[in-house]
Length: 338
Ligand code: PEP
Ligand code: MN
Image (tube, rainbow, N blue to C red; front, top):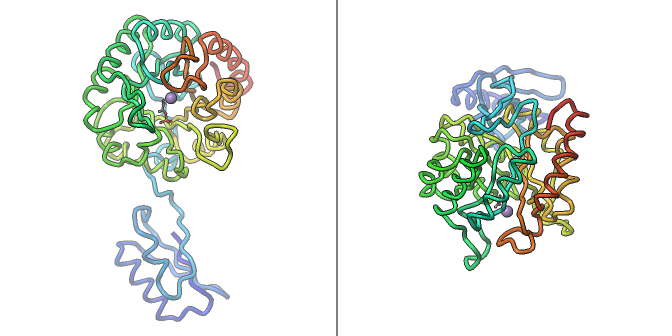
């Protein structure tokens, strides 16, 4: 970081900063300019508290140079990460990987039908919540372990990998037993204990961006998982809350290239939660592929009008299949495959 002193800061104030920098175990390099003096702080300072220096008298501002996340950053790893989804495929590579399925696992037969349909259309994984984070405690909460068993049967019959949400530490063993990828939902993006515990498993993690989290907080959440040894993290943009109300969430696609600039982790986009409206999903899938998304996660339901959760944003299998065809052309235009 660089500590910029105020014009007219006294030599004592400068000495005090130098002393604090050394106390932090870092080296200092003082540069005296014509108008201002700056202290270049040398060493890995990304985990040091810059606010400690910021509030010292004589200091104007402290400018960080290194990102506060390390494992997730491009400085740490130059080559892009590709995360394998069981034997089914990967996210982060030439091919755009598509995860599709119902919001919630509702029923065995319906799940198997949708699994066959999305597989046929080219998905590599089936999604479906067995544990559902619902705003109301009276709403359908998911089938729990029974739902995980249906997902396992769907994998057995189709070869699709399973992506399912884990909401709490107690649910980790069951989800690890059945799933190929553990999803951390938007509402849990800063549940640091949960992040650390999934970081101790060997299952890939699909981390959804919190609905009011900044990009930096998102990457620091990924860092929690990676710091415990699990480096198979997929970042998922699912839309954020804004003043805008014609959509359920606002889908900020500029985050895709920005995440790629800062991190080696693959990025997936969720236009289902990102818009809340099925008729907007296909267009936003195309836009996501165009801006470099490594994958998509899409809600698909055999009968959206009667879905127990998120029917309004769910595609029918036919709409999903059409969307899959349309992204092939976009992918080719940006030198990818779909
Ligand atoms: C989901 O994937 O169905 C879900 C609950 O997503 P989010 O955490 O993004 O709201
Ligand atoms: Mn949903």
